[in-house]
Image (tube, rainbow, N blue to C red; front, side, top):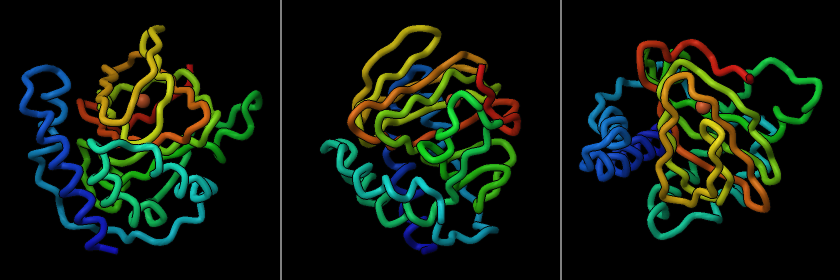
Amino acid sequence: MKNVIQNLIEESQKFLFKRAKIDDKIGLEAANFAVRDIPKPIGKFEKSDSPLIRYIGEAIKHGNPETADLLKALEPALPYLPWKYNYEPRPDMPDLADQMGWGEILGPEAPYHDEHFCFGFTLLGKNTFYPSHLHPATELYVILSGHAIWTLDGISKVRSPGEFVLHPSNHIHSMQTEHEPMLALYTWSGKDVKTLSKYV
Ligand SMILES: [Fe+2]
């Protein structure tokens, strides 16, 4: 599994390196990960028993030629990512923990330890609303598979595989999938990557 994860990290850095050549805010965030020194892992990757595993087969099917290589590197790793969902429970949406989550590879509590930066993958089942939330970290997403409606500061847009989305620190955002699950790479950077995301 170590080689699968190592390969996934390298492919992810390669993907972001291409975008880092454009000199804008997204390019800067992409560079932050693309040229980052990745430490040796201190934790293990074991087969996950997350309910999200049921979406993996379908979640990798909705990529495009741009994201195909990265999805190929991601596919064998998906069942072994440390999938979690750690928002406070919402009585109005009791199924969220079964419908969405993220597997963090690099971060303060991830198998690859970094106190100041996070990198992982987010998975949303189909017909799922990831409610409005915010966090101090600056967040960069790359959509790898699935079309979904992404909302930032009240403006909604259908986003496709290969697109980059930047969520500045403490800006409210949400996602809504329809008939396709959605798989995306994410990074967190900035002064505070330890304060968890909160629903608003
Ligand atoms: Fe976020």
